[in-house]
Image (cartoon, rainbow, N blue to C red; front, side, top):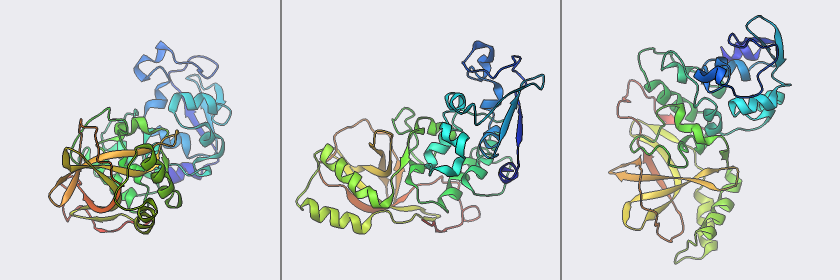
Length: 314
């Protein structure tokens, strides 16, 4: 479906709840059931209709033309949190992080819960069987499919500011977990150790070895591809233990916010695998981040019949 819209010359968007002869430029109580904007903008499937076509023309309920996406780019950014340049130059004009794209769907709704995942396949260039009845598991499968074609660690950066504390599976339950990820940017492998060094200085971390020795070791281990198996997702990441919780680690991801601050998550050991963990402690050990190869927990209901192991490409 996404490719069908992408190959179209023009897409007509019918805003059935807009009476006026001009496009609504301000949030209003008239659309109280849809966050103050026309309902079309909170539907799950219309996200691809908005982004994929080369040209999108909007019409009100009387089929009167009220504008197009390119000219309304700034207004559409306020409505959707999608950067205006996406409407002006297309999604491929800049390299967007997985977390940022997910954030565009965070508050969109679909009639069937599975469609919150299926409606995003085209945006990420992946495909998977549509199995209605699987519920929220569809979004978990979507994340695994995305990881087969990308090494972007921002896929683990959901809830970056700990507003929705949840422990367990490292995969997000649904797109709403990415609500605060609109400014998350991917940090490329050739920049990550430099950003990590800034993090070390900012938090006054160190150790017995010299900084140059630590950097040398970090450069040799950073940014390996994901490997997915039925036992979990294997990933190599820099870790820092918590002072009073030696089995809990702060993990620094290769992504940052618009201020350049690296995003971190907390993981807790549960034997051979590591869970996403919500911890109230704030004191980490003042040691250099140690790159460790970890297996991250995925949902326990993924079995051999549902999850194909293999290398996830960079």
